[in-house]
Length: 94
Length: 387
Image 1 (cartoon, chains in turn yellow, purple):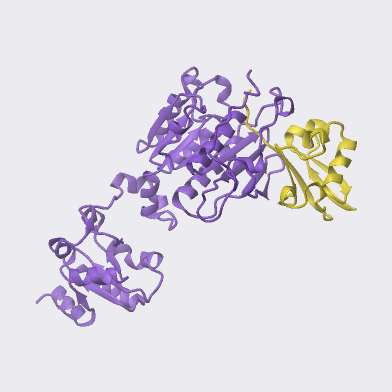
Image 2 (tube, helix red, strand yellow; image 1 turned 45 degrees about the horizontal axis):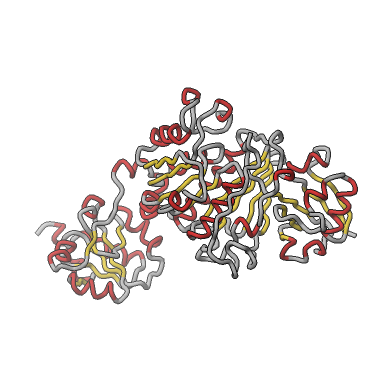
């Protein structure tokens, strides 16, 4: 188990009560998302599709590495890692 | 014999001289021709390929242009006198193979050797861009490059305003603006190209007025159209860089796909409330193969998963930060200096005042720029937020 900090992007902060960072203990990125989803209802569904795969318009980075070129959701989370969740953002079209 | 004549005779003893034809041969063999005449003289013509450094700045500038003291130099002026003085100074500076060209440019021209009329800055441009001219990475050559450059901005709004403003100030010669919107009072909290009295007028016209008031050197091409699959290639034609400051997913994917197809660098900025994203998507970047926007985000979110329209909103200063960074990336790409954000994504959080950089790997399976990608066909996504 590693202790990591997950940075929550603004569009998803409605699921974290406005919090921009959530501390998580987990060994893999998949576990991080599962733990997050358990503590914050609705959040995991924004990041993973119905089959549990990373959605096409969201990326997850362990420190600066994109998990798509690591081992996806199996990617290891080192102790002290910063996990960035980065959704596609278009702009402020009202 | 006066002092000047005496000194010239002395110099002829120590500085080897070559005629124009011999100088040309030396140049073809790899020597650098250094034209030390004044800008108004150079404006009338100068040997092709010559380094042009005015006599007054020669010692200060020469190492920036020719760092190797072993590089052979042929110094030239109009008649062959100033170049003797200049050549002697270069020898004293440490250059070991220095010639003075007897007969100067007049002799070069009379012998029909290859010359060009170089583009040079006007006196007004020298004043305006003086602080660029003293930066070695820009200098006169870079400034001339900017003046000959063409940048297309998608959107004359929050991001496009600061980007276009600074690009115009920097002397990017042609700035294209694509925006079909009119100025609304609610835009003025962040869209600094527009003014209160221009509320209701087309944004591209308002933007042009501001940009040309700042810098009349700049040609502003306005396209009061909404970007579509039908017009995107026509609008992108002839530009060197595209700066994406759009506010919706359909446009962003269209910009990406057209940039990939046309080989154009796509300077990307996006903002939401207090957060910004910045990158340069450019698969054809000469230094390393870069990703495109679809390598990062293959598809836009469906409407039900996109940030809701009610949530949209932005701190007015935020596009100032991101749009200005887009202008910096555009200028770097135009000048070929520094390391552009190709393959890197910068995340900016204004509340924490934090920049984070993450990698954007190229996806070899990308449907648009990947190894197996075929001809690009444009997809027109549905407008998510049609309020």
